[in-house]
Image (cartoon, rainbow, N blue to C red; front, top):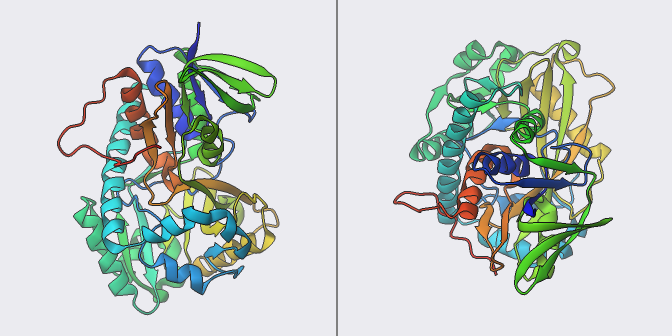
Length: 418
C-alpha cells in the first residue's frame, strides 16, 4: 500500500515522521545517508534558542558582508566565487535586511520557536529520549566598545517578543559561569536567557527516529532520491538511483537540496546553502567545563556543554554548494575559542565539521502544501532547524490531515509557493 513518503531523515524529516505516525499514517522516510541526522543536523551549535530565534537578514548584515568580503578570518564570509550562484536569492536576501522586516520576522520566528519548545517538552513527557538535554538558559556576553548599548538593544528586542532576559554585570556573569573568570575584566555585560535549552541535535534526531520506528515508521537509508514522479498533476512515486517507490503523498524535508528536487515539478522555493562550522571536544581533555552554553557576541561563537563533550560553533560562509572543510575557517574557530577561554588546552584533533544550513531570503521556513495536491514542503529553517522542528512537524501534519485551522494570533508564514 502506498505510504506518505518523507524525503530527508534530518531533524526536520525525522520529527515530521514522528508526528505523522502519531496520527496513524503509514510513513516511509528516505535518506541517502546510513543513519538519521548525518548532514545539517549532525554537529550544530546545540542551542534550542526558542526565545531568540532570529533571522540572519538583519539590518547590519549587508555592511558586514561588504566589510568582510573574501576575508578568511571573517565571522561572516561571502566568497566572491559564490556571488553568481546566489543571483536573485542574494538580491532578495539584501532587500529583507530592513529593520522593520527584521523585527517582524524575528517576532514570528520567536513565537513559533517558543511554541515548538513547548511541544518538545510535551513530547518528552510521553516518550523517553536521551540527547544530553540541558535546561537553565544560556549566557550571552558582550565585550568591547559599544557593548552595553548593543546588549540593551538586543535585550529590549527579545523582551518585546516575550523572552525572559536577565541583565548581568561582569561579576554576576562569572558568578553564574565561573569558567569565564579568566576574562572577567573584558566582559562589559551579559544577558541570561533563562528559559532556553540545549542538547545534541544529532542524538535527538536518532532518538526521535527510533521512537518513530517503534510507531511503525519505515526508514530507508542509503536511498538516493533522484526525482519525483508526477502524473496528471499528482505525485505518484519517488525516483531512486536504483528503482522507484510508490507514494500516496510526499513531504520534502531535504534541506538545501530541496529546491533542485522541487523545481522539475514546477515548485520554486528560494533556499540557498549557507555553511557553518563546528568543533567537538572532550571536556576533560581541554580543561574547560562551562555549565551552560556561552555565546560570545564579540567572538561570534557559541560554546555548548554536551555531556562529556564541548561543542564550539560559529562562522557563516556563503560559498555556494562548496562543502570543503577549510583549514583556515577551522583555525578561526580555534582562535576565537582561545580568546574566550585562554586557559584552554586544545588537542591536535578537534573533530572539525561543516554543514549546509538551508537559508531562505527572509529567514522564514517553507512549511506548506504546494500547487501539486499531494506534495508538501518542510524546509528552509536555516540555523533554527532543531529549534523549530516540533512546531514545523505539527504544522505540516495538520496540513496533511486537513486539521490545520488558523486562529487569531496563530503563526503565519505569509509564504506563497509558485
